[in-house]
Image 1 (cartoon, rainbow, N blue to C red):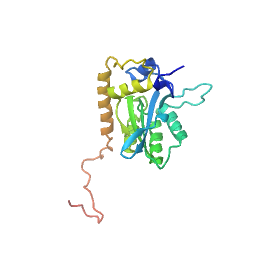
Image 2: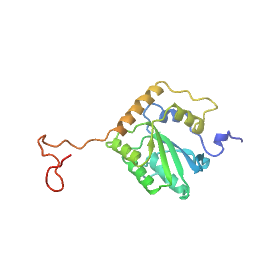
Image 3: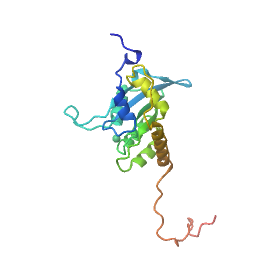
Image 4: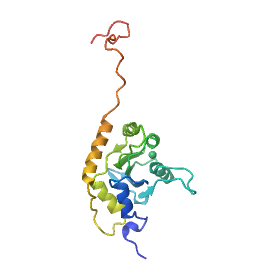
Length: 216
Ligand SMILES: [Zn+2]
């Protein structure tokens, strides 16, 4: 049998799964589409052999632990054994990482200076406390975070979905969804929670090392 070019080296996602995971509804499973590029001179060149998609691992007889999609991805990346003498750019499209997975991604970036990471979430994982700090720490670790726009949806559709040769047709309200989520992410990344205000407004001013009030 002959396969269309996109099928030649990997399976494709069915369009319904794509809509459930990258649309505006709340899916039970999480899919993650990923791509790898390697630096050659001034250009990023796709490493096609490493692109694909995966799903989180739910509890089952085959999988005794629950593993979020990001951690499945990190496990896959470490299996690739990327050459430390080269520079790589990993890009994935999924949800934003939860506060448990975000530190694992930070740790990965800290330990792999030859790798940079771009994350395009379709939605923000808001179910667990601390998700905002997780995203800010990830940004501070050098990861780029931006909500998937129509451009990324289109790209995913063309690259990872069994699209039957059809063009991507944005779902109703997708544009509004992208605008809302982009603003939400921008607000999260902009804000740092300030330390609590001092208990009394009449505290003495700053004191210099010599013990006398600091002058400015
Ligand atoms: Zn997670």
